[in-house]
Length: 401
Image 1 (cartoon, one colour):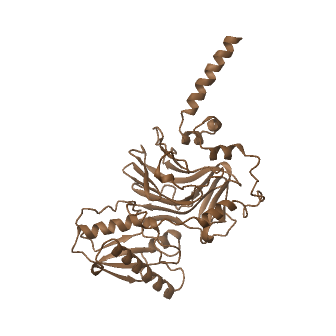
Image 2: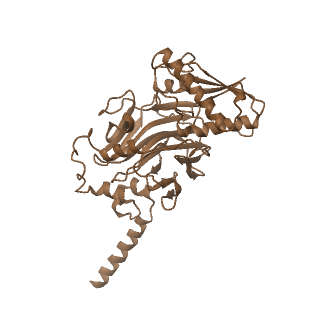
């Protein structure tokens, strides 16, 4: 009997080692091993174990509209990164918007109209500054997907961006799950503790939190996630830092879903999702011969002329074009969609064009090489009846003078 016990102990120890050796992403994707993986961050363990005292500090567990007060307060109080912090940022989004949603047209407490719920439960809730965030609240897994006109919409190259709230109260991370035409999956997992991607047929590539600059003050704040895929290479950015490079994804991706282990008291929260085709706008070192550059990477706060920090990738690209071509002068043209009145849009577009010009001057471009003009919604390049059409019309153009 003693020898049998010893054998059982050896077997159990062996399999425990095998499970523990799996990366965090494999653990999440394989529900049967979730509780055996000691590498999983404590936040995920809390989410799985349903901590019985989770109600402490939150007496509205059954009311989706009132939960996650701590996240909301932290989101409101957290500071927005400055443009200076992003001064070395090199992410440039794709030049054709396939999908964009900031939930402005949706009702608080409901599921967003431009998304599909494929598993679990999810709901919109107010977060910082009154903006809506999508809360994945119940399910193992909660799965949501952009509502697209075609099933296969991604082509190489492409970019994906979203804002993620990295809670530190038991919430799991968010998985961006890339799909192939044959239904294979390649998940990217991001939490406040780790970024990890598992290529199809390959081993997980990850970067943990210990000693990494990108996790400094990471918890309980909004963070901008940017993903660029080109020629099967993937680059992942968290805020201003390129955090992970995947040399070969081993697949052509055609669609994407967002998923994770959701709970009412510990939801996964994200917003401002943008999917774009293209992403090959690296003009550095090249002689510029085109008549203009159309960009969708210079973004502003809603209905304001305040440039968002993640715009620095595109601005850095424009600065380098001007430095590489010292004889070029640009007119900075601002364009909006048709939301609001024409007069308001004209004023807003001029303010945004001026803001871009001023920022380029701050980046050592001679003001005599730049002018600024707003066109409002008078020159659409797409329809104004869809989210992606409006997103394509909101742009900044650099027209050669």
